[in-house]
View 1 (cartoon, protein in one colour):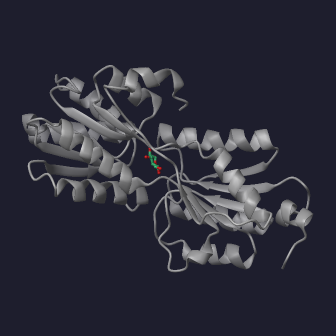
View 2 (cartoon, protein in one colour):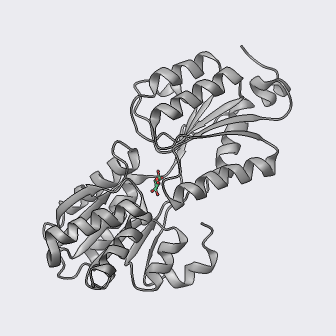
View 3 (cartoon, protein in one colour):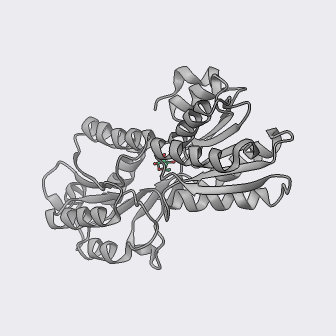
Length: 305
Ligand code: GZL
C-alpha cells in the first residue's frame, strides 16, 4: 500500500518514532561488539526505537527474531546474516508484510535481490586481496602459511579465503600448509594455533587470520610456545580493532586490514531514505585501509573501535 510522506516516515508502527528490528549475529568478537554499539548508540542519538536480538551465533535465532519483528509491525529490519544461505523464506515474509530489510555487514545469497531493500557492508574479497598482496610484498623468504578461518558459511570467511587463495596463485612461493576455523573467536584462535604448532612446529612461518580476535589468540599461543610473534612467525589479519593496531605498533602483528564496524549512521540514513520513498544504493561498501608498521602507531589515537 502506498503511504503519504508523513506516514511513510512513521512507517508501519504508525507513530512518529521509527521502530527498527535488528537481528545481530551474536557477540563473537570485539568487532561485533563495536558493530552492535554503533547501532545502539546511533539509534539513541536519533530517537529511534531499536529492538535488538542477539542471534547467539545461530541462524535459526536470527530468523526467529525477524519473524517476531514482522509480527510486531516494525518499520524496518536490519539483519547481519551469520551465514550466506537460507534467508529467502523469511525475507519473503518481510516483503509480504511491506517491511523493508537492510542487510548489513555480511551478504545473503539469494535468487531474488528484490527480497531486500539494500546491502551496507564491507568488501571482504578486497580485504583478503589486500592482505595477500601485502604479504607477497613483505614475506621475504618466508613461504609456509597457516590460515585461521572465520565462521563456516559466512560471507566474510568465504570471501576472505577465496580472495587470499586467488591472490596466492600469483605468488607460487607462498603456500597454505594448514587451514582451520577458529569461528572468529579469540579463544578458538588460540586453541587452533596451539594444535597447529604441535603439528607443524617450526614449519609455520606466517599466520593469515580472517579476523583480529583469532590473530590475538594465536599470538598468545605463539608466545606460550616460546616463539616471538611478528618475528619468528609473521601475522597478517583483518578488522583493525584497536588492540590489533596496537599489536602491529608493538611489532607482535605485522599487518591488519581494516573492516569498519561503525555502521550506525549509514544504516539509519539508508532506512530513513527507504521509508521516505527516496532511491538508495542497492549495495554500498565501506572504504577500508591497511595498517602495518609504517602507519599503525600514528593511527592509534584516532582508532574508534
Ligand atoms: C566482517 C564481520 C566479521 C569480522 C569478525 O564484516 O562479519 O565478523 O571480521 C566478526 O570480527 O566476528
